[in-house]
Image (cartoon, rainbow, N blue to C red):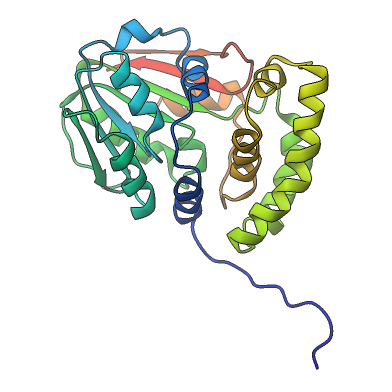
Length: 265
């Protein structure tokens, strides 16, 4: 007989771990449109009409889906996990102008092809964000728009202090099935909390409108990556100043969570 506890350490990369997530949570939800409107602010849906867009780290394709619904002319989406690619292909199948590719953001070689390149919730998980961003800028036509949303340090200090150490040292190394189960011990009380208080912050107020499985997927998403940067505004400014952009601005989204960066090539 064996005594004690056996811990299995998982060496999967963040990309592979997110592939598990997007395979499990692959259904388009109307609330994803609300999330996207928050992440792209101050841009509005009408802005994307007729644009050719590049979706870097597309996951299951939910952001390209809504931009195409808003009238984007074409979408090229890519991810570096085959499960994510298959989920995105399924969700974007209704759009004849959409294609989904298996590619690494570090290896893309498009040059001056797109009106808009965007990456939502991806760059802060990368070991070399500057290299990835430079590739996206290179893919833009002159005058094209770069749109990025990342985690912010400001407003999320409690996550950096209490959650990040748990993610970094424990949950990012555990098997994904175990993390998905353990996530319920956070998502159930959080769901009850936001449903009762309907806030109090703008971000928690937004969470209170989500279905439980959606909120649980967000908690799970927070616990699985091996890299998760929460950047200060000054750090964002320093990072984007290194890019070949004629201008860029850093915005605080309506729910006051994260940074939205919009730049012109």
